[in-house]
Image 1 (cartoon, rainbow, N blue to C red):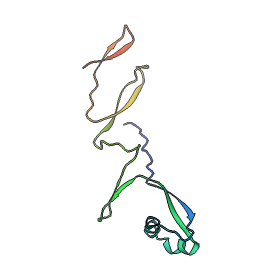
Image 2 (image 1 turned 90 degrees about the vertical axis):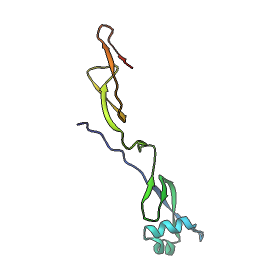
Image 3 (image 1 turned 60 degrees about the vertical axis):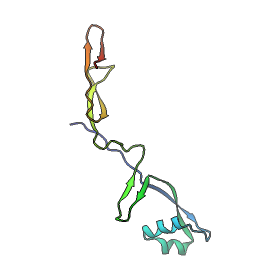
Length: 115
């Protein structure tokens, strides 16, 4: 079994800022969602969104997320192949039903793909 580190996924990045009496609907809804709206309002603060990887929220409460570390093909798996520069080592590959065939040419010291 391969020991593969799972990526950490950042859903939101926020910061606290002074509201100066101007709180947008997004900032108000975010503070309500986290249950801190009343306290932030008393302190004249708001939550500003720096970045988010949430692409949608439906009425049932589930959210759709994305980002550069999330695979698009959820059925894909991690496999291994021989490292091209060092045949004694294995290299991780990511793919779905990917079958790689190679011809190992010992005299030339190379591995050639076979199609």
